[in-house]
Image 1 (tube, rainbow, N blue to C red):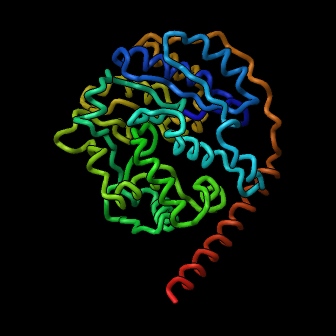
Image 2 (image 1 turned 135 degrees about the vertical axis):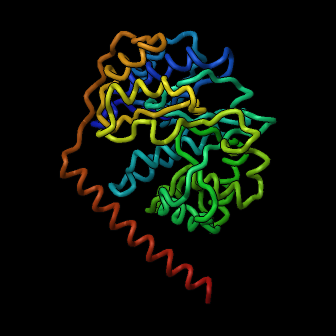
Image 3 (image 1 turned 90 degrees about the horizontal axis):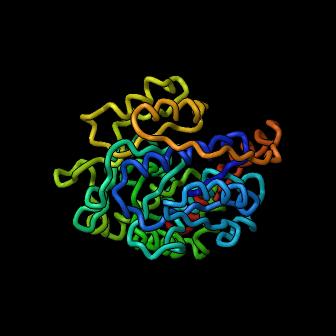
Length: 331
């Protein structure tokens, strides 16, 4: 789990983390998870470490991002600084931190809503994969396929976003394929490819290209699957207009929904304290002693606009360069 706590969008993340941990402590079978890795920035590490000390019963390990991602220090121009995709690179780099065959990717705004057993998540050595039509985010699939030099397969099933279970062996294949196509370290490729790739589109496309998808994964809608990773997409809270106490309560009341996890997305601005008060009506919720989060060196709205504009410009230049490269190859 990448964790950021400063900035306009992240101030509630420690409270949301308590909610996630409370649901895992209640619903996950003992020793389901071998280790919980929290990837943090060095300037936020002390604050987060104090907060994590309130959960001694969980197998937590904090990893300092700055020590393992030197590429982040090399690519700092405004159009390269995109926290959303840096978090995705952190997730793609899971094999660097664990020897486990599978990793469960989580964000602080995820909640477990039903009992979870290992045999439910991993069926005969294959991890559940939650399907979603590729038409939902068509651009992600097209851009990722272009980076990998493979077919986007828009008519094939895609996969849902976090929470997701990924094979560390297949994640390594993603790294290898990107480096084979572009002749650069895979992180450099992603940080200088100004397009809408995502960790999950890169992952599934690589799994299909290698022919290893069926060896490592079982679709959640397969008759052999014992559950779904996600509740029905219409049940999770994705937008501010649906962020109500009633919608959160529904996550724990849908007995006929086979989904194990739900999302109350943080960008809805629905306060974590409100979510916690609803969840506490269904399971025990631990609210740790609040820790004052240092103020971020906030950027102005003008700076954010300039970053977005420069990123869009870089995207257009990248696509033009990529098209020229294709034509040269064809000749």
